[in-house]
Length: 472
Image 1 (cartoon, rainbow, N blue to C red):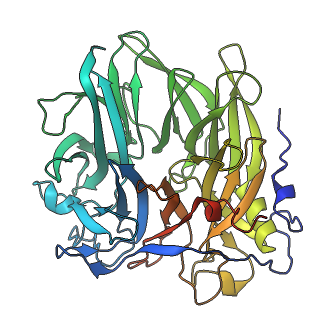
Image 2 (cartoon, rainbow, N blue to C red; image 1 turned 120 degrees about the vertical axis):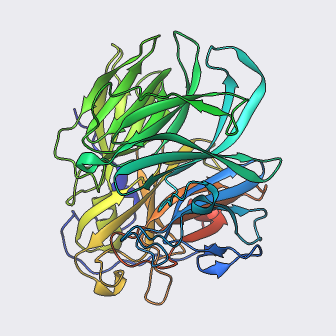
């Protein structure tokens, strides 16, 4: 059963199917401020750079960002002579300057180097591994990233000591790189087992699978990780898992074209709830951006995600609804290819989006949740709008999904035109922790192209981001 999407009717332009040709459409820009422009030495003498901003996270009245150095000349990975590892940046005020808070290469004490800040998240433990309430909740800022030696892969985790303004490092898991195994921790989620009461932080390791850790005040990082992977019980996944989320009291995660549900208990298992098929290109990803929304048909939660199996991806947004019998049914909503093609009036051959999740904010007028979805696309025409040499649109588009399943399309820093900064893809979104109604957006996607110092963060009011600034 497929849901007919109403999204294109709201774009306000003629609708063109992916692959059709037309003249370029125009969009009016609004007030945006560039908060971070990579490529400077901060007040502590550290180089603040990066090819991409991977994550933005508010934590204890500050804003943090994880960058990456993929396709940046400061990262040299042959023959394993890396110059600069990924970093966590910190912003103390909306009009302040971003400072390097953590250098993952310099801080691990083992000579390891990390190309990307794979997942940064603020998590809160309320119970221990036995289900007993902690004396008070423990809110931790956790950074996880993968590193490689010639033969092995390593997943590390750092936890910030907010009182001391330092980070404590620990190895989560390491193992062989045989068969192209990727140690890439793309997401994490706090979850309490419904049967045992145990509360744990679940981390996607990459191809090796899913592992978890419990709060332990005696550990320098405050997290004691299990020695063994929880799933799969043996072997590895054929591709890297990209998303994990709690919905309807259960834990779900995605790998390739499959979504799994955890079956709780002393010996937990996992069951397949959706399978969109094989043939996923691991560099593109498969199912990504798992996000919970209210079930539009009944009670409970649905799972929203983007399906991007390979190089011809149209960036299909899908929704997984509870069927009332313990199962789930998939529905199609919009796809990024049609949205982008209609907005620009040009043939679009490939789109990718939802790098992290689909970011929820409350609409300032209705109070209803809307979701912001970043995406990128390869144009087949309008060469002046491309990032030179890549075919990718040089601007940074995002879609806003309303609760009635309609979509509108907007751009960071207004519509792209030659001479404006090349942005390519919004990867991450965060409400300001500074009490000023701003929303921060960060991104770029190196996409196998030289991207020295192309990491960026912009800020704008929520009204501007949602396209409400010019409304009467």
